[in-house]
Amino acid sequence: MTTHADDDVQPPAPRPGRPRDESRDDAILDAARELIAERGFGGMTMDAVASRAGAGKATVYRRWSSKSELAVDAITRGTRATLRAEDVPDTGTLRGDLAALAELRGRDKGDALMPGLISEMRTDADLAHAFHERFVTAKVDMMRSLLERAKQRGEIPPERDVDLLAEIGPALTVYRKVVAGLPVGPEYLARITDEIVVPLATAPAPGATGSVSG
Amino acid sequence: MTTHADDDVQPPAPRPGRPRDESRDDAILDAARELIAERGFGGMTMDAVASRAGAGKATVYRRWSSKSELAVDAITRGTRATLRAEDVPDTGTLRGDLAALAELRGRDKGDALMPGLISEMRTDADLAHAFHERFVTAKVDMMRSLLERAKQRGEIPPERDVDLLAEIGPALTVYRKVVAGLPVGPEYLARITDEIVVPLATAPAPGATGSVSG
DNA sequence: CTATTGCAGAACCGACCAGTATCGAAACTG
DNA sequence: CAGTTTCGATACTGGTCGGTTCTGCAATAG
Image 1 (cartoon, rainbow over the protein chains, first blue to last red):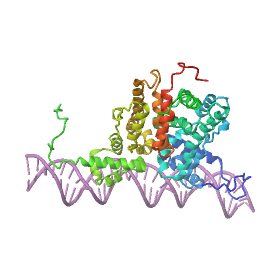
Image 2: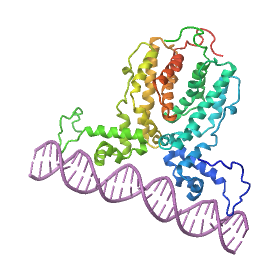
Image 3: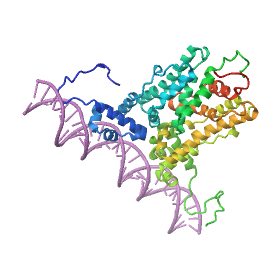
Image 4: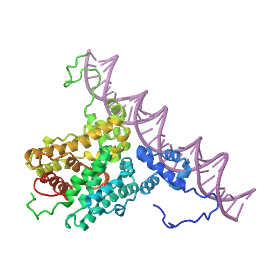
């Protein structure tokens, strides 16, 4: 939990003593993210975080009271953690929007955090929540937004349910990267778009043409 | 070389001393699987395995020389580790075959091992290989076999590439179970079949009928 | 100046774990 | 019977890690 009582800026420092060097926060969070990506949650030892950040352990524990809280913050406050649907330019077609999203996602290194965190979700509820927010909700909601945008345009039949469609992209890319351990390149993303998502989303409504059910 | 003609069953025991109780193997492997599913690879301590199996640690280490080897065997020799395409009855339709597969998969508890192993693949090559074999190759190959079967039937256009299609089912179910932490019920599997795989696989070839793309 | 707070580094503690050794008993061979 | 191997159980070793505390120095307030 974070006390967001005073989210506004503290001008200089109304207290005596040496003021906190706020730049240490980013150094520590970056080190934590790097270590989670490289060695997983277990390999992110507090000593390693402090060492890589060029900080002392006391400095780390003065700002985060436990390893778990640091990890949660490292996930939540990730550099490109919050990519919103408004950040994806409206290209006029679903296919174009998905290509634009792929372009933006290509620069995102956040997915590398996933493998090291999945096993810890079992026992750490806060971590599980942060993980779910960043790696499930954010991804699926993004896809759903683009699909809804296409529905507004008329590319997608209005009665079509896009919830399941919105899961396909995240599921395929995460499965390939995290589970299969294979790279996800632009060609793969293009195939997901052109061979799966766009055809399914924009297919004419069943019942209009012929009998499909079984 | 010695006589390697007796690779077959050793009738009783040609050696002196107390014979090994082969039933301990299964008890130990079961305990290892349970612990990986419940607490992950890190929580599968050798003490816990021995204790749950009702065995001594010496018994465990007499059969597996390290924790890693035990884990690899626990994955590989899983109860329902090897479900083959021939085990899925040929129902005459792709949709029926996928329903039959869903029925068989419903009794499989092996997927619960995945979360606890993903992070260890980074550092343990043998474990990574066993994991990939069981949770990627086996699943995707199964799907590809059923799709090829449907292609033989004529349900799927012969020129259609089924490789990407074969990844959709495994990716969606694993993403939902392992990453999103949501249950995968029969309805969800049916939706994957009816709304995604079957429509994509059996759609008429583009260019055959008329203009479909936009 | 003194008091206070933050800093990096390092020592320390208690818990946990992989792997080894040992023990007394059991099950087998000869 | 003796000898050998397995059994479950327990203790031990060496290492690692989360978390705490201490040291000596730097930066700020009054």
